[in-house]
Image 1: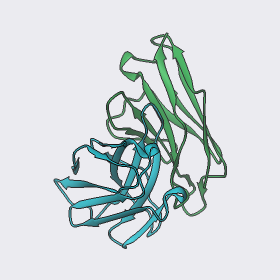
Image 2: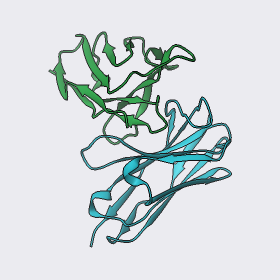
Image 3: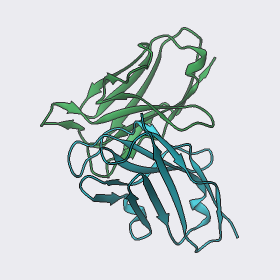
Image 4: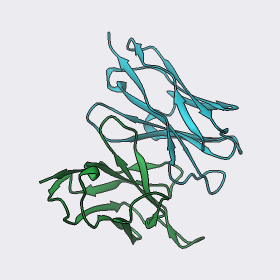
Length: 121
Length: 113
């Protein structure tokens, strides 16, 4: 069973960027789709985007397009978010799960422990 | 994007009582290719990442207690906990994966009365 280990907490200034990593142990991402989900303090879950390594396909939530990049290299996935604002302060999760075609994922079965990103001046 | 609306926002139920959570999607989630609804339910306890309970609207994940069940089709879905246990205190989310852009419901907080 794959387990996901994320990089440590980050503090960034407004306007800067952050890159969070997610490493798969006990397997690789080759047979999964990778999604990134964030959760602001006391708030709900917000899907950011996904990457399907088998096909190289990716797409992002509308509000993040132009500011987010999701990629993977072997057993490590990355999410980079630029032009950070205070509203981007949140716990960022990577998650992986099945896909049912080259553009569509299914549920998010395995989750990382989360990476807290704080944006503050 | 498909908007997912959950209700209620929160509820408090006595131990052993039934819990019903509703999730409504802005469009049908029924796939004509496999006749399944592209909807999952998650449980999130404080300080933990979410855990998937139900996939394809009604398929319970391995290891999930059978007091959890999912039902519904098209645009209206329900998560039921048949007999609330103390360890079920959590926030529950629905998620659609019909679209290439995945969206979550706003969450329902379940507490003990």
